[in-house]
Image 1: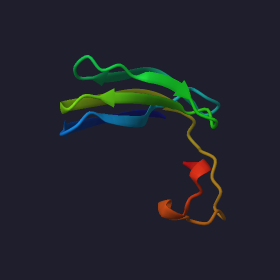
Image 2 (image 1 turned 60 degrees about the horizontal axis):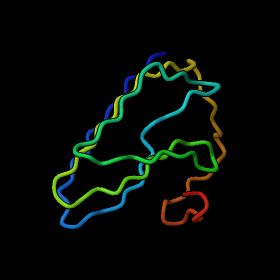
Image 3 (image 1 turned 90 degrees about the vertical axis):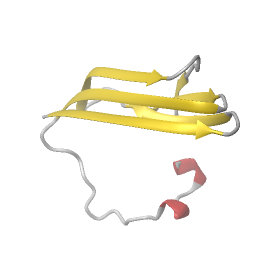
Image 4 (image 1 turned 120 degrees about the vertical axis):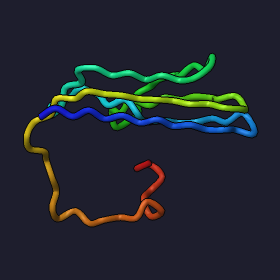
Amino acid sequence: MWIHATCQLDFNLSVSTPFLFMLRPRSGNQQWIARDEFLMSGEVTAHEFTDSFGNLCQRVHAPSGDFSLSSSVFVETTSASDSEPGAPFVEVDNLPHETI
């Protein structure tokens, strides 16, 4: 199955602001990233790193004023996905810090 996901984030910042995004998926056992685009306005640089769970993270320090970011990805996935039907739902506020 093919999935095309996009997002557009627009900010008007009164002060320079640090951000941590997780907007670029990785290829893995059940998905293949065919094309991925990550664009930011201005002269802002994203410093990318991999967290302890293997996720690509983008750390950005945006200057005050208008700042925008767009992301687009084309992903081929397996037709079925893993699931854990017995896993309990946990509110975000109750997740441990190391989970986030």
